[in-house]
Image (cartoon, rainbow, N blue to C red; front, side, top):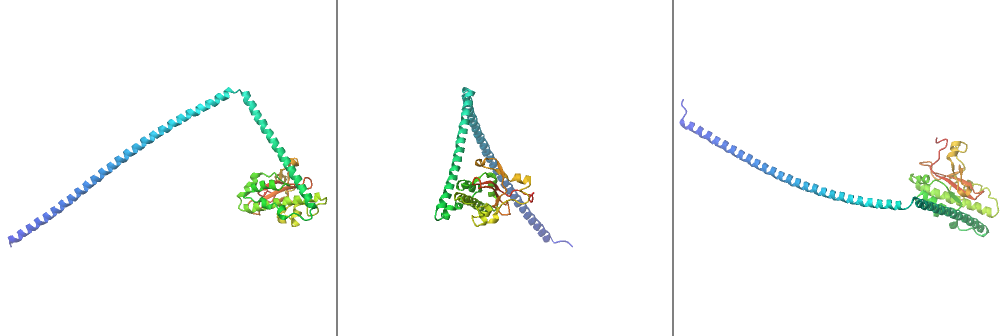
Length: 327
């Protein structure tokens, strides 16, 4: 059967319309692609301009730094020249003075130093002697008084408070006139780094004050012409009788575990004596526990020479020394 001509014409018009729409969409798509391409080109151009500007700025900075470095180098060269000029002047000055003159001047300086050191030692000896005389006179005066002096006058403990172990020892050198300290200051200073350092400093001050009070009490007994008795037989006896500012358990007459008989242990406990006791060294087993059993377990080793010179010598302040139980 034949197709009507009107239907054939309609199909042809629809196809043409569809093709037109497709063509139009294609044109729109191409237009958008072209617009995007133009924007991308513009962005690339802007980036290139920014890079060029950054490059020029960096180049200017490098040039400026190079100029500054050149100025610094010139300054160093000038400074070097000035230094060399001064060195040459010193060399010339030394050259103009004969070596004999320099040796003579050096010998004069050394001799002057030795003279001043000798005067200082003499002054220190005179001071210590004067302090001993003062203490003896004080003891005699106290013996003739009807009432004893106030505790405040006798108690040196408030004068021995400090924030460092070495400072406590330095103050004791001034306050405790019957105590001589030859202990190594570096070994004592190490105690400040221990956790219980504040307690160690307080107990060290109490030990020094007690030793001074013990020495004064013994000097007073001697001035009164009476025997020392049991109480003043030793520092331990003095503390056990309720005197001083230490507990009796803090004062030990000797070390245990063979420290008194073992050669190596005795050598460890041998310390310097002051010049007024002839210098040299002596074994000091008697000690005071100024620390607990924890940490460094600080100890003070001393020599009781109150029967002869009236003095007590502290030869060691530091951490617990080794004995057979700690080897």
